Length: 139
Image (cartoon, rainbow, N blue to C red):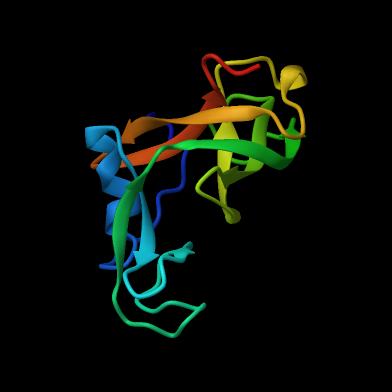
């Protein structure tokens, strides 16, 4: 009997499609307002800063810092490897844009507040899930 996927996948719509698919090209897509430059996440078709309607996806560097995190030891989904780190990662381009993501490529006990991280993408079906790992070259 096949196990269900270890990730519960999102419902894709016109607003969030870029976030979940641009990883195929190695890009992290975050919505940005063309009127005031404010970045918007989760993606919506308007700017909460200026109420502008010229909002669309734009690639960002994929670099950020761990704002907060938890190490989870419970296997919530069959096939999910534990322990794992669930974190809020603030983007360097705009620290109030925070992404919920797993921190990988290190022991969960090594994750720290303020840790510099970079995005990588895990392909799952036709989506590319943004995950983060310790940044190369970080101090």
